[in-house]
Amino acid sequence: MKRIWVVNPNTTETMTAGIAHCAQAVAGPGTVVVGVTSPFGPPSIESHYDEAMSVPGLLDVVARGEQEGVDGYVIACFGDPGLDAAREVARGPVVGIAEAAMHTASHLGRGFSVVTTLGRTIGRAAELSERYGMDRFCRGIHACEIPVLDLETDPMARKIVTEACRDAVESDGSDAVVLGCAGMAEMCAQIADDIGVPVVDGVTAATLTVQSLVTMGLGTGKRGEYAPPPPKRYRER
Image 1 (cartoon, rainbow, N blue to C red):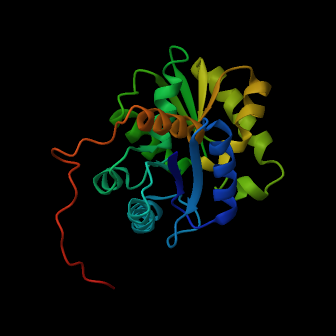
Image 2 (cartoon, rainbow, N blue to C red; image 1 turned 120 degrees about the vertical axis):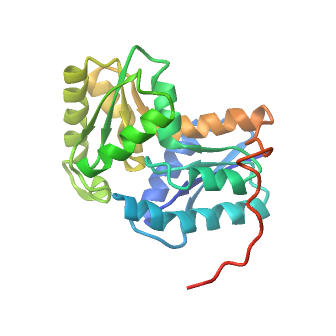
């Protein structure tokens, strides 16, 4: 039995539940997917500061998963916070949802658009597109200006995100859309139906990527940069 933890690096339990539901829906036989909420950190991640403050909680979860024999991890935040550090700690594969979503969308046409939450997160998404070698596919990054937590509570949220996706496809001439927030995961199928192009949710894309890597017996290479960090005594606050 393969075990995958889908880690929500923020502390909002209701968001974890939605993320876990989407991840569990695509898991294959013999794979157990569990959604795990960070034990401490911000309630949502919408800035560089939020990302930095989310990483200790994320790493705490991964360290606990290693003690419990978890096979692989999904980082369920579109900024992919703490990805490199988590890869140092984990024996099995660790995949971020932005990383998985962009790579998946690159298989679906000549180019894709990213639709994210707040405009202040566009720069981070652009950095990740460059890091992952996706600039030749990423035709534009657009914000719908909905705060992350409002995706759960604003009755107009899905309509606003849908229209942002439709506008992005038309303005960019894209063949697909990447949803730029884990909190949008449950909207994915309906948005795709409404706008008539493939829409990629990073939570499901990353879950299936980790499942495939675990099935193949593959984990992060430990020869160099991603070797376990040297043991040190850290001063606590």
